[in-house]
Image (cartoon, rainbow, N blue to C red; front, side):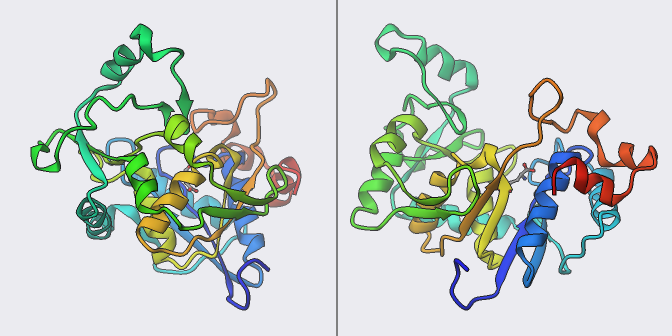
Length: 286
Ligand code: GLU
């Protein structure tokens, strides 16, 4: 087992922005199975208050219990973790690795459309930020500004530190050493703080996986590319890097990955149609 004699701790970290579907069942069941023997934790990723709904959170507990899963209480909820995210962000700011940014998506698209920029690159967070605000000092930050990590400066700060993670999922099994040049060109200056949510997915997930003592992160293949960002943040914040297991995504009949809006694939629709948890396991090939 990847973590020596430590007990394995895995987690399922859904966002209550819709009903759980077959893909979530896959993630939750895989995480719970990989924690046996060990501990399976649940984390409600509800930082985006505008999109999260209490009824979806209630439905998550109900659907997971119906699947036969049990998890540790109390459940961590990201909406209650603001102080931890602030302190991680302030630490990164104190290292002089951050800058404020007020570019909208439209500004970024327009900057990238300039002829000297070549073909815009898409990274794990969409278009790679062209660095328009990179020269700004943190003291110029306004209440509407996002805060970005200066990736090149962060990697310079980490020079000499081994940057790698181990993956046990079948699609990318092995140890992945981060490609620093590619991190700068193909990932770039990721957002650590959005004023609308008070943190960012990347910062919150890294802080919380460490706070929950997660030894193996189990999640969908769509987040594989984001893992390199998480490793950089773990090293900067001096947190352990867990091992990773990215599972294949469940796709619809047309080969498209399932989204929360695919209500037809919601677990409770199958349940209402008389299917059992065993049928769900069969459907996702477990
Ligand atoms: N909250 C994310 C989702 O629902 C999962 C993030 C993760 O597992 O790291 O897709």
